[in-house]
Image 1 (tube, one colour):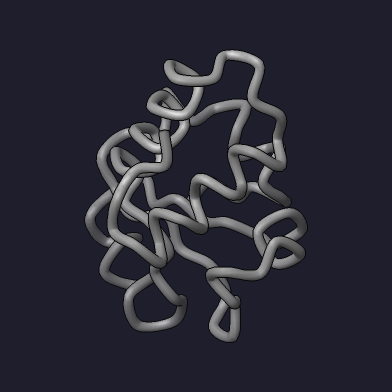
Image 2 (cartoon, helix red, strand yellow):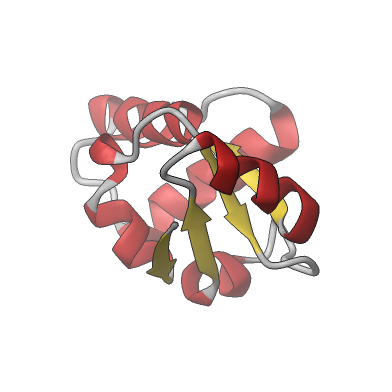
Length: 100
């Protein structure tokens, strides 16, 4: 299991996460900037870890969706800040749509 402490660590590797879910601890608030900024994110490295994660953690976003959110935002606004990228993730979670 890969562990990322905070959004910044996750952002550094968003293109290399593979095809999994990104999990968080139960109680994580999806639309909380603070939780996203400082939360711990877990990405399984195999099927067994993913199955185990469903039982003990909360799923946040699929890795491919997360990558799409970041790429889409940067394609439309290359100067986007970390806060803009967090806003795009929250928008997706709330609207099931990309924020251009």
